[in-house]
Length: 110
Image 1 (cartoon, rainbow, N blue to C red):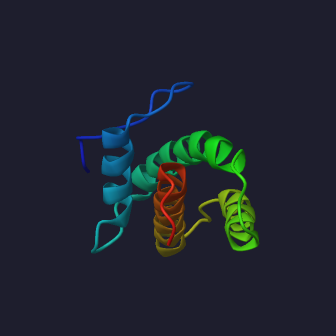
Image 2: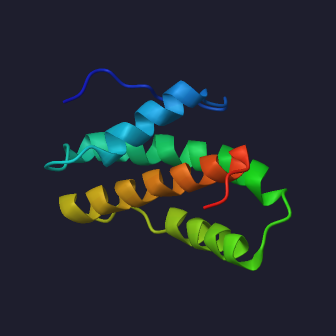
């Protein structure tokens, strides 16, 4: 199990280095990590998404960007499921959502 974790402090915003490290851990190629690590990653990513979502949602977004926000909201409600592979896929999807929200926060346009 990976003992070097950059977890977000509960109730506090994460800095960009913590966010990036969490995203990289979630998107690491290879076999899925243990389920308990996926649970930790999911919880951390959900906190990050909540903070970023609030910032991005305040901006005037085009319909495509608004649809992406709606999709992210739905994705956060899915949960990990009971299987290791499905949990791994969900964590990876949440990490990609974080990447998109970071791009939007920075003002980047895909």
